[in-house]
Length: 392
Image (cartoon, rainbow, N blue to C red; front, top):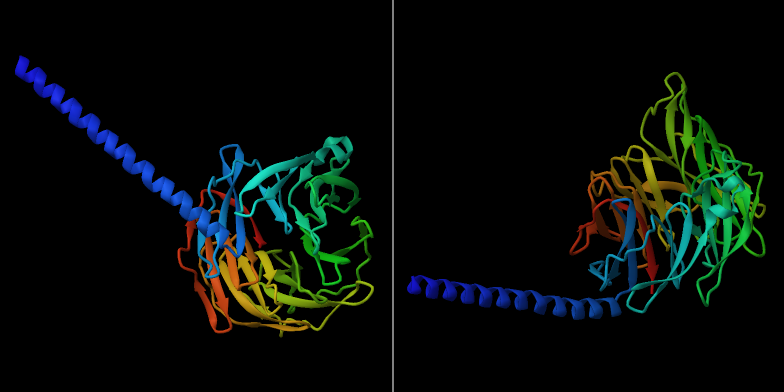
């Protein structure tokens, strides 16, 4: 009996010692990882933020991006910000849960701190709807949101907020009533005055634009623009837009069957040029518009240098040559065959892509000779929703 009791005590002591060693071995690497994360963040050329759904709320995954495109999680990531939609300027990250808009200051290591909030729904008639996306002008001094059901609980609107550069606070500038068709972010051309997007509400093709006022408020424009003619029996359904730093706008066009009202061929990319009054002209035709392999387009982004354009869709991601007013030309095949929801560029030639279905963030390094997945990519993220890149 005594011998067995002693043996039991010995086993307990050994197990206790072993668990203590194990606990210590788990702590040491975490401290090392924290210092490595801090060092990586301080040398980052950009910060990458990805919102992700967690239960009924959201959180923001934070990364520092090296010149190679490799990402390192920022200490404290994911940040418990209840923000789905994201946008950023050179100093703040903005996020919204569909009702409130939050401002987060960005530290030198990329870490976020909430500094302001505003209830955007309070500015709607009958307190309906709320933001269903966020975007900023080219200077980042004005934040906008396409507001779902922003008027009498029916029509959509665009709200505008000025950004206090010292505090991150948002001041409401007003809204402009759009229509049920307009619910996508505007993209501003180089003069930062005219912003454009497109839609195909109830199978009616439409290109639309708004002008920025002196304080950043939006004013509706009567845009003159023609949708290219599709092959006989079809018509083109446009969606989304992307602009370069000059006066060019790229718009995806999906051919649709008149008889079935269903897609009838691959999406193609049309290119428009804006004149001094904001009107659009194009030389795009069914014959010269580049055809994509991404199926339904979910996002489109012209690179900061204006030479490339990323096109994401339900069947993957491609990169094309962007040639100003001239037709877009092919560059890569599909970089991934997984559905891609949102993409963003940095000025170092890195293209970031998130896939909610695949639960990942992928980084591609794109050069004049092709595109390759960056070291360390992809990164697992559960239910990624939105993406913002801020360059240092």
